[in-house]
Image: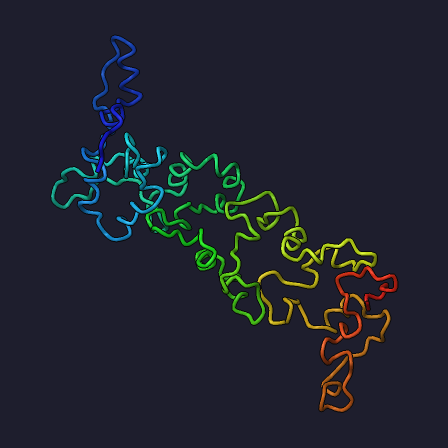
Length: 317
């Protein structure tokens, strides 16, 4: 499967100590020079043992393409060892009962530090990442690229809108619970993914949002709420989360509370008396109250996000 190797890397590399000794005559030679040996046959050596379906599916991914000159499997590249490091000792003969010398392993169950794993990935993907990863919570929390991405799999779930949320929910359990509520964004309906709002590798914005503010993020889909309006509703222009929760809610329209309770957090003494409404105001309980049935306050104040009507100062039209 390997047609060529990189001659320098295929041989034995001297350590810094060995090079220093060669540069200075008379310096005692180190007792033992560390060697870095690559396997003789590259991937052909690896798949003699690692021949399960997921490993072999690598050859149906960009990483396993010979046509891409930047791929680890392009002519002259190091194939498996481009990512996993020199495997000569790992693939060589070991004494009975002795463990094989390790290579770099990827994933949540790997003993290789996350920083080492990420360094390998960034060796090729640094330009695409920019500075995002180093600014994000994942880097600060020691999350490795392979904790989310499956490099060998033909379908990397985290890059698929349909499967992405399940990967994110492995860590973000609170958001998983919120999406199980009756009213939520259509993430589980496969119509949007977490990355529609959040930058997965980190951003300079709060909550790793893709846009500068929460409102700007919401306006990406809900453009009709942006305005400008002749008559603004102050909480709307300030922050959508004053009234809504972003992931899921037990209330319609992702509201934090149902009206009139939500509205009376601000309008407790203005316009209408601040009465405590009870079951007697519901249908069948006596005299139904327009403040409790149907849309509650929105029965009259239907333009709650703002109005451009000349007579819309009360957001009624």
